Amino acid sequence: MQQSLSRRERKKQETRQSLLEAALALFRDQGYEATTIEQITERADVAKGTFFNYFPSKQALLGDLAMWRLEQLSEALTVEEGAPRSPVARIELLLRLWHQQMLADWRLFQQAMASRLSKPPGPHGAKRRLAGLAADLVREAQACGEIRPDVEPELVSDLLFVAYIRRFAVCIRDEGSAPPVEDTEQVIDLLMNGLAGPNWSGT
Image 1 (cartoon, rainbow, N blue to C red):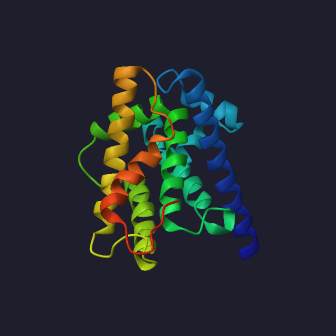
Image 2 (image 1 turned 180 degrees about the vertical axis):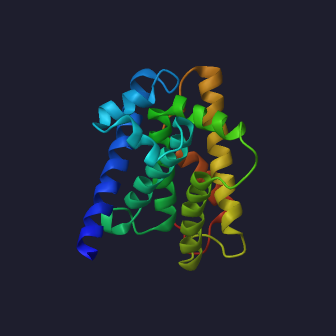
Image 3 (image 1 turned 30 degrees about the horizontal axis):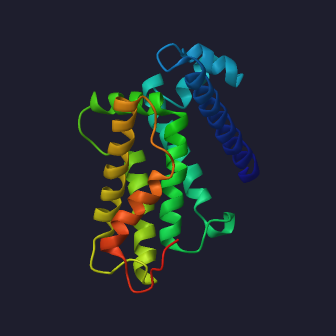
């Protein structure tokens, strides 16, 4: 019975993954607004009604899509997957990978933000997860002396992403293109001037 349940759970995870992958591909190809639930389920090769077993609406899928992308970021930040041992270097890697995601999905990111603003205030799972990833890395950096211990990890996390999102959005608005990925290094360097601990020597 447990084995049967395990197979069923695996099948559910595979179906959800297929729906997310299909939605992301279609959103990239033709835009969020032009994509229908029927197109998503057809691409994922499932019945249209199956969609609602996983997501209450197309708009709700955006949040799950963001969480799925963040899960990919989290996996890439592990030392076992080849990420650097230095926590600050992994913070820089996080920004670089996030930059790549936003570059690929900027319009979708804007749509998700608009969707978020249209809802009553409440917890935002993807935002909390992203901030949590950075804050955890700051704690690691404090523990090994790369970041001074008298700063709040959550504050550092907020500073990182507020500075970088603003830079990204201003470039898109004023220049019509995203900032170069090297901007991540400038964000880190500027913050590290005031955050560096005794063991930080640069990435």
